[in-house]
View (cartoon, rainbow, N blue to C red):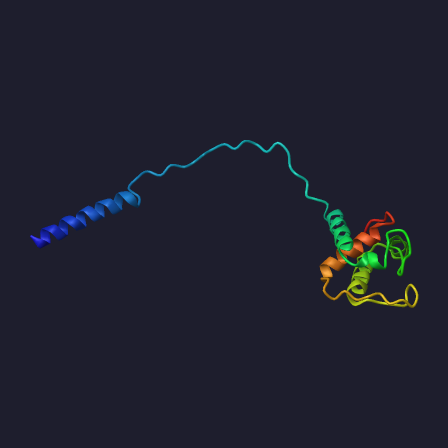
Length: 138
């Protein structure tokens, strides 16, 4: 009797397992989502970096010594843009000055170091400053 009960339970389990795991016919979903009507252009990465740089400059202490058009303690940002050509090398140079500080280029006044600013953010800030004379990066 125990053997019959065990066999019956095993047979029922095997039947349930067979139907649950593949005894049914699979259907393929073929929904039509239509054709895309237009593609979205990738954002202008350079313009985005300049916009982010502007936000970073405005949120920092740059305005203590620099103004967009007027000399305060340090040169105006526009004067910096006019002095340096808008190249990758100058972006990296100015980013280094933002992070490490500097002196001697615009007189004897020291530019404070900003070691907490990342290289990437400093480069965005430099791109913003270098864009102020209307030049684009080349």
